[in-house]
Length: 138
Image 1: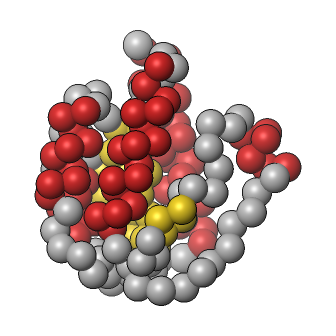
Image 2: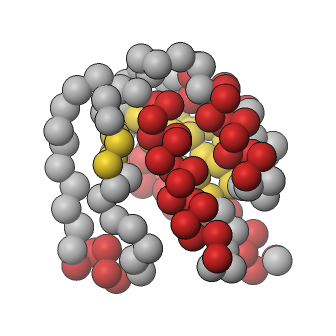
């Protein structure tokens, strides 16, 4: 999913190989609204609930949120998915207290700051290793 002022689904229920061959990410511009993106993320996670997977939310932004604290959306995700793994990532300088509070709203949620592309790669590798470890231990 991509989001700015409105979220949109870029890829849904595809394998990594399918995503790699048909990836179409384009920046549409606009303001940054986390709430609507979190609501759409919950809908997508609900659609995938019939598949036996551990839900994981990786929420990345390079901007400030324009639509509030998102506490209600985070609480809704936690209610619907008590085993949710949550990672929030700020990409750029300075960080985001909003993304930090979103990660803190989920037990064992993680906030990551990636100031450049190298750190962003490391962040995604760390997340992937953690998700792989949790899946193997279930």
